[in-house]
Length: 284
Image (cartoon, rainbow, N blue to C red; front, side, top):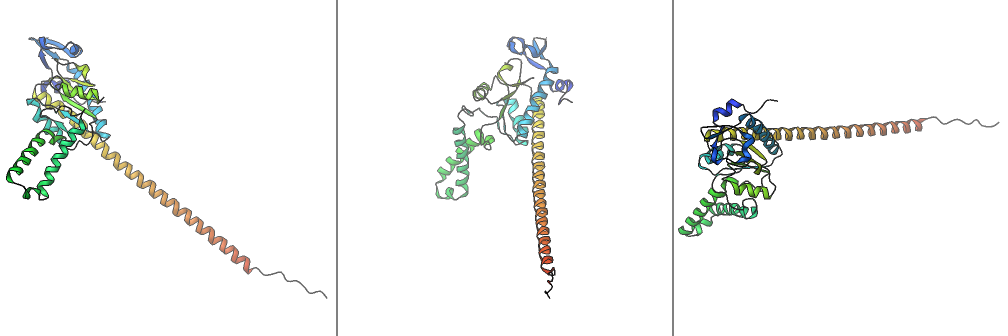
């Protein structure tokens, strides 16, 4: 089975550069290849295997019709993540992580519904009956909510998984997911603990080229999952149509057989009615 990436492709993206040796997390030792000029170098052979593992798992989640929430609020990654994840129609958080995003999800949903209410007010004529000052207040509230929750407005239930860039920075998101037993995927650098997430991809989580390349691979896997889901639905619909057609054909055949049986019985009765009666000779 072919891998989704190669050692050289990861090398070109700069995924092998870790942090300074003094900033390392000892739990990352299995994924560190060497130290060069005081900087840890990540073993990209292990990264290749971990990319495959994570991508295949995300593919299955997408195939099942569930959502993966991407989290990345660091400056060099937020625009990359937002741009790429939006293409596969998955939710993302690239501004400040709202505390309780997962553990207090019902409150977050209220904020999202508030956005819908303000949108409705602007279209149903409510805005024309209020003062300019009030309209401005509602518009500002809507803009603020859009920044915080616009990217998760389609998330009607808790996500099936989280994909995180830099688990040290997004430690609150990791903790909330762990508390709710939500599977976590992450790009993990040499200064982080890979044991905190379920699927750790050892790689540079600071360079935009490295982040962009790995997010690309994950989004591609999600696209495959969504494509498979569509194919599964079509196959299921076709199978259902075939079964329904077979049932109709079977019913028609049974009905035809019953009609033939009735016709045969009618003919027999008719033939019996025409049968000449036996003549009885008169006694002399």
